[in-house]
Amino acid sequence: MERRTFLTGALAAAAAAHSAAAQTPALVLDFPSWQAEEPGVSGWWKAVIAEFEAANPGTKVNFYSIPFTQYVQQLTVRFAGNNAPDIVHLPTRNFAAFASQGWLAPLDDRLARTDILQSWTPLQSEMKWEGKTQGLLLMGYGSLLYYNEKLLADAGLSVPTTPAQWLEAIEKTTKRDQGQFGLVATSIEHPNLVVEAGTWVMGQGLDWLRQGRYDFGNAQVVAAVDQYRRSMRFAPPGMNSTTGRQLFIDGKATFLRDGPWVWAFVARAPEAIRPHLKVARVPFPHETGGTSNSLHMPANLAANKRELVWKFFELAASPKWQAEYVVQAASPAPRRGALGADAAARLPHLKLVMDAAASAVSVFPTNPALMEGYNEYASIFGRAMMRLISTEEPTPAVMAGLQRELERAVPLR
Image (tube, rainbow, N blue to C red; front, side, top):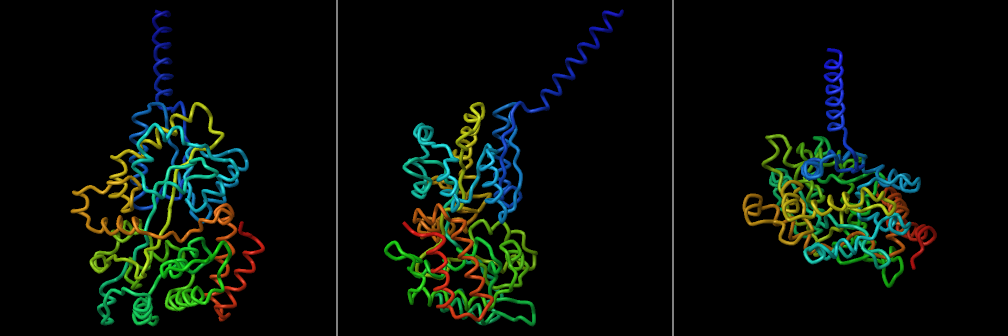
């Protein structure tokens, strides 16, 4: 009896141990992202992760959120402390700052064994640093103009197709006494100010640089920035991207210039507002946009994790999940042909999304010095734009001060 009891107890203990082992993953891949709770795209990530975990028993992906405003700083601290995440998700504008430190692994050999380079958008070329591909582009996009059709109609206006028409519509649909604004846009010190101001400049065929030198004093550039400044007079102060989007979907603003991912926010608008919210091209001669975000492998990733992380990249890049990315994130996937005919018929706004991405001019710098020092560049630029929209300092003086500060802090080469 004692032996039977002992065996029964041993078997129960073994079963319990086996059950605990089955519940405890043998390996965890650390994956922070600012998109972990973002409507639309977070659902795509979680679905990819679920399939990956099912295909790789014993492996779990720890996917969690870090706010965008803190994201790059936190990852920089982690890399500097030799504590990088296993799956590295970056805003592509910050890619060079990480690559230049030797923190990212080259992927050329792995990519050569796939169809990715042949099937991807040409913007994948921006994932190279010193001749080596060190990332997989997840999205390059064109900006879109979201608008409230009812507020325009109430003012007797149609959808603007030129910068002048847009400025007029922004002004005429602002009714501050009713809490209604012609525009919502980032109006606090924030990396998005590079995009907000850059849209008015690059959208009119201009640039911050000329012949490899800063050109903020150029009369045409100053005039375009002055238009941006005028538009911000009719936007509420203290807005970040999240609060601005909410104000728009609540029906309190006529226009929101943003990326294609905002469609998921628009879909959550109140029932009385939702039918009035539409999307169109941004009213400039040139589409503006840029590379958005990308996946990377840390250079010092443990050997037992490298193949798993690459499998995760390949799954995200597969035709199935690229097609789902377009639908779930309402954003242009980098794989050509990702928008199928059925999806295009069901969701006609996605064709506008894909067309805008195909012709977009980047608002982000491509000069190597600015790419490597992007955080410093964006910080200085953001402070100057805050002076522009919150003080009476003349626009030429603000731009001259910006140029002097950048020439000292981020010299071009």
